[in-house]
Figure 1 (tube, rainbow, N blue to C red):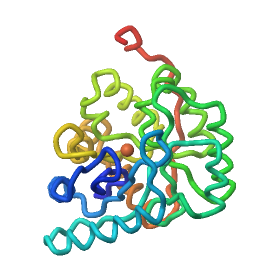
Figure 2 (tube, rainbow, N blue to C red):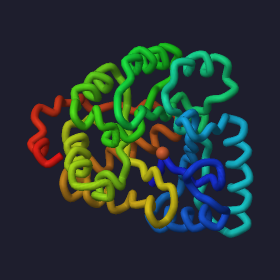
Figure 3 (tube, rainbow, N blue to C red):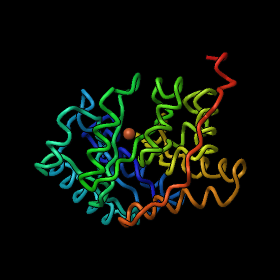
Figure 4 (tube, protein in one colour):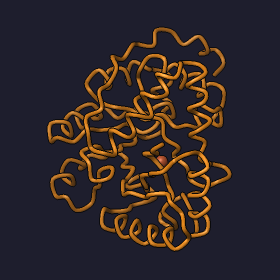
Length: 255
Ligand SMILES: [Fe+2]
């Protein structure tokens, strides 16, 4: 499998805190059946800034450590970019921002508590510039949980979205789990990734998530979601299934 979202690069964000931790994360990923992992450190999230060149250098050094240790996991560069007003300007300048494995896919994160008014316009501008936005873990955005139509409208506009494996396995609670299932069911997400930060509190549970998808939605859905990650990493065109609106959230009363 391919994991398109991870915080395995050590000492540059809230992910791995040491080389040893990164090695253990790589071993855990290999146990899941992952052979390629996109390293996506936080950028512009208010705490961490990791620009293109820094990330590329870190990937090169981690790869050589993995080689020495006999680890087969292939690490490729990426970035998890919190959306901000000047993002398009930085895209044009080509200094700060990094796409996923140098493809035309970019991983963008929304703030956790709302969907900024300029989101739709910004993501559209990216598309016009030939860059395909992938929205990181929409199920962890509280406004989208309350108003899934906000996500639907973005997906309808041609955006792609990535669900986090732990949301589906229940690590973030029952409501997020149920909402995640609805997102898969309504074809509002196109990838599942680990977003792993360490091996304990934010482990890599991609295998378990795919087992759940297979049980609940069938092998074909699991296969489709896995294939999309592969398609993305090779820079080919992901063909989205048509999205459906989430009409009524029956579990609203539980929040
Ligand atoms: Fe992340």
